[in-house]
Every structure is written in structure tokens, then in C-alpha cells.
Length: 417
Image 1: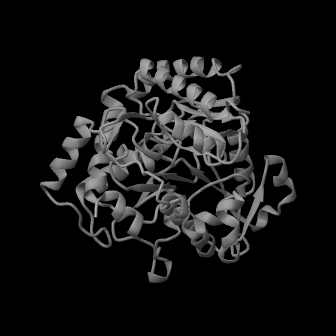
Image 2: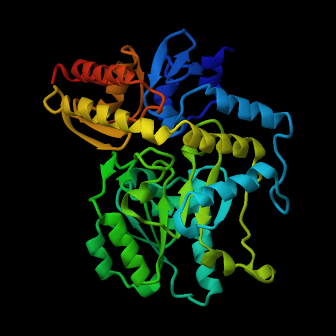
Image 3: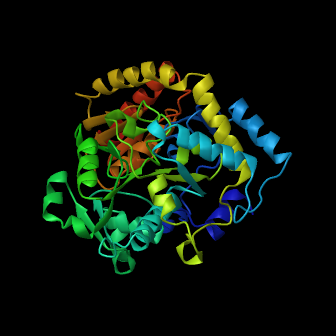
């Protein structure tokens, strides 16, 4: 069997209706190579990676420094257990991630596999923390409508998108969902353990921006009510909003921060949950205070080695400084969409853009993204919002290619409406 035959007969893809995927007339795109901002398919066609391979590949494909770091580590060892052992890249990575936050406030780092598990461990740490410090009433979590924090059961409990989360409600953690900060006044804070938020921008909600100052105000409410603040920086972390972390934009340090996606530059699955010494110290003592949570690949050396090189690239290649001009150019390109045919609105947060297209039959956003392929752009929609979130190595000329591809695709899909 060739790749497509094997895939259709045995594969099962995430967030994909497999009846459509396995239909005889469907021709899957088989991606086989990448270089810089581009990926190539099995037919040799080249596309700009317009969503950084689902928001992960921040420096581009085949970055020579990341390639070299991976090869150097694999010559030593690929993986050893982190349960009761340690290794140099994991220990160094934990120290460097904590050092990125001001004042030493986030001093502990728990390494896991992906964004979902980074959130999952934060929730379990928060729950056990309340038990250990004698606050059994503080069991409730607060999250926001439109939120997406992952698909493990605890993380999914926080989700506020009915299509993804409602069918699992019977098995979820106790969560109160709110739409705005004003609704916090109606909640009994004495029962709240933690609040979780995607800082500055909600991704799966359609790149929905929070009002300026909202994150700082939430931090103040948490401080006033002894509520732990969990910042989900899985999408926004590592430069995506223009600063290393989105929380920096409002001078906020959370009690937990979840990191993944760009942590290894899009090379390997790795996640980190950072927290405070206050939380950590509550777990010290006998076996009954131990955090019994972990995964086989916690602290994986390959992932940690690449993540360390990723951080070195930020420092030594001045990535954030060079990104500023590209963010400004993206803003100018989005302004050109204001009166474009079939486009309703655009939103931007740093190097993240959401482009709302006018509904033109079912799955308009998906059809626009498929149409954009023949114009050299590969991306995915969130319903009828086309997402543009390219690697940082993209040039301004290539950004223009992305904008033109979206504009042409929208016209083609919406021309009869």
C-alpha cells in the first residue's frame, strides 16, 4: 500500500471527519519536506507554512542550529527516565525557563509532553495544594467561555467551546465558566482554587482578543481572593505576541504558566509547567504529600536539548527585535483587507492574525484554506476564521504572498454569493 492507501485504511486524524477524509474522491495532502518557512508535498508542490505547523514551528523548518542540537544529543542518549533521576539538558532547561520570569517568582518547572498535560498538571497541583494547606473548600475552577486548554479530561473541563467539550461534561472537573471579569463578583471566591486564562488572545475561539488591561485586573482579583492564576501560554509563548510571553504585555506573573508548542521550535513534543516556591513547598514532607503525576517521557533529553538551543536562538539572533518590523508589516497587510470582497473583519495580536470570511455555504473557512493551497499557502481555519500565524523566519515579501493567497481564495469561494 502507498501512503494514502495506508492512511485511509488505518489512520485516524485529530479534528477531522474521517468519512470525508476516507472518501474515494478525497486526495490527502502528503507533506514530506520542509525548509525555512516552506513545506513541500509528495508531488513536489511548495507552500508557505501559514500556521507554523499548528502553531509550533516558530523558527522555520530545518533550522541548522536546532538540527545540530538534536543530532548532538542523540549521539549521547535519546531518553532516560525522569522519575527519580535527572539529566543535564532537563535540569538546565528548567533553570533557564524559570529565569525568563521576573523576580524569581516562578522558581519550579515540571516537564511533560504537550499543552494539554501542561495544563493538566497545573490543575492537579492546584487541587492538591489546597488539600495540603488545609483549604478543602477551595475546589472550584474558573475558566472563560470560548476557552480551549487541551483535550485531556482535566484540561477539557476548562474548555468553553461546546462542540469540543459538552459531550464529556459528565466526567469533568468542577468548573464555572464566565464571559467577562464582571461575572467574578457573582462567584463565591472562598470556593475557587484557580482561574485559567489564555492571556491576551483566545486561540480556538477564533483569535478573540481580550480587552487591554483585563489580564492585569484578573491578577488583582486573584491576589485579593487567594485564587491561583493559571496562564495558558501554549500558543502565545515564545514570542508569538511580540514579547517572549504574553503576560509580559501587562506586567503579570501568574502562579502557574503552561508552555508547549514553540518550546522546542516545533521539533519535538515537550511541555513545561512553571509554578511558585509557595506551591512547591506545600508538597514537601512524607509520601502522602508527593505529587503522584508524570509521564514516561517527562524530561526527555532530545526535547530538552532542542528547547535549550531554541532559547539560545532567541538570545543570540535577537529574534524579538527582528520580529517587530514583521508584526508592523502584517498590520499593514491586514488593513488592506478592510474593504476586500468576502472578508468581514480581521484581528491581530503580535504575529497572530485572524481573518473572518463571510459565510458562503458550509465550511467556508475550510474551503478558503483549501483554495489557498494553489496560491502557495498552507493554513487551517477556526470555523470561518482563517488563521495566519507563520514562522518568524518568513520575509515581508512572503507575508505579502500569504495575504494575496487568502484574498484570491476568498474571492474564489465567495464569488457566487
